[in-house]
Structure formats: C-alpha cells, structure tokens
Length: 299
Image 1 (cartoon, rainbow, N blue to C red):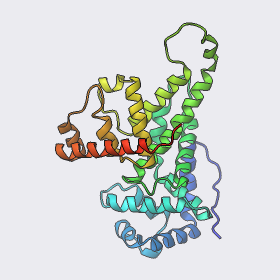
Image 2 (tube, rainbow, N blue to C red; image 1 turned 90 degrees about the vertical axis):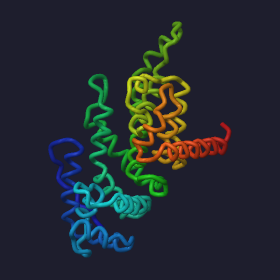
Image 3 (cartoon, rainbow, N blue to C red; image 1 turned 180 degrees about the vertical axis):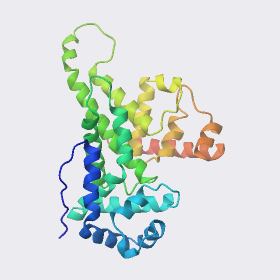
Image 4 (tube, rainbow, N blue to C red; image 1 turned 90 degrees about the horizontal axis):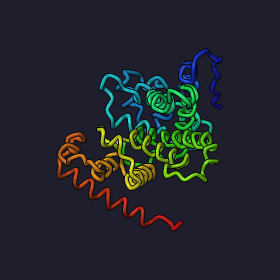
C-alpha cells in the first residue's frame, strides 16, 4: 500500500510548500518504485532513462520532472508529451495512485501556475498572490484528475494550462460579481454601461483568450471587445476545451476574424507553416467549429 508522507509545514507561500513536499516525495522509496513500474508498463522507461542518464530501475519522480520540464534541449517534445499523457491517463483513475500521478503533474506545471497566478493578481481590490496561487494549483489538480486532457489533440500541457486558467478566471469572475452586487441597487437608474455580471464575463473571456494566444499583440487587438468578437472567442475557447480545435486551429480562426486580421503570411511565419497551409488549416478549423455548433443540443 502506497503511503505519501506529509512534510512539516514551512514558512512561505503555496509554491514553497509544494517544493518542500516534493522533496519528501522524491525521497520516498515506495513512490520511486511506483513511478518505475508506471514507466515500464507504459514502455517509456528506456527513453526516460536515456535522456536523464539514469538506470531504468532507478527511475522516480526526479527523472519524471526532468522529462516534463526539460532545460537542456535533450528531451524531445514527443517524449515530454507522451510522459504527460501517460500521467494524465493514470490521474483520471480512482485508485490511490491517481492522486500521486496528479501530484506529479501539478509539480511539473508549477512554472505555468506561477505565471498564471501573476497574471491574475490585481494591484488593488483583488486577492493576494498566495490566494490565487492556491486557486491555480487546485485548478490544475482538478483538471488533471478530470480525464479530459489526455485524449485531446495538441500538446497536453497547453490544454491542461488552458483548462486550469479558465477555471481560475471563472472563480475570480464570480468573486468580482459578488463584490459588485451592491451596484445592483442602482439598476433603476438609466445606464448603458455593462453591469457587474457582464463586465466579469468579458474580463474572464478576454483573459483566457489572451493566455491561449488567440489575441495577437497590438493595440487594436488589446482594445477590441465587441460583442461579436467576444462571442467568437468564447466559441473558440469552448471548442479548444472540448478538444474539437487544437490551439493552432483556434489561433487560425481568432487571428483572421477580427477587426485587424493578422495577414496569412505573417500568421504562417509565426507558426512555422506556409500561407497556403495556414489557410487550409483555418478552413478545416471553421468547418469543425460549425459542425460542433450544429451538434449542440437546443437550449
């Protein structure tokens, strides 16, 4: 029976505590044995051992993290994605090892969680960095356990981060709406400005879209917030979350259908493709998006 040791609480925020817990986890021989068995069963042990310069029977959380967060260019994207998909598949289970798999995934995603947290902290009137850090970590854990990520096209880490960010944005938007409830007392006054609920919805959609790379840099893109544009972004984000569109598909649509479209030659260059290939990608992505909308049940 696998038992995860609990480290003593230390001073510092959520990410410091996760790092301290990780050190204890890595020192646990039972955890190392479980990880080795996973990699052997998933036929990934030889590749992980090769890129981490380790013996196959000595593989553990340290080698997993080195594969999931490569720094020296030795590890290929294909191997990183394969290892993460295998962990996500295990994390979707209902046994105790699923908890361990999700915990390893969270540790691998800490750099992304820190960026996510920094992006949502407001200089005033908002939650603290550590508050949002807890939300980011919890969102990553929940999404990792959901079973929705490992079957999607595209890079699993990007899909995982996008789903987690959307959860954080929804929670923060709900907070902002609750804090704005007092403004509802003024609803009898003639006012064409959006109310708290609409404002928080707009904010959450734009934040998630920016994180997913759907809004190319530039003053026009940053300022654009028309209702039609927001509806498009929300549809694309939903399709990416469902796995209907890959991140590249989403960008192909969002970068084109806007008040200041990114030229196909420039968009293709950014994505390492030809203009013709980029246009074909957009055409196929639009067809898939339309098909997914037609299959939606009536409200």
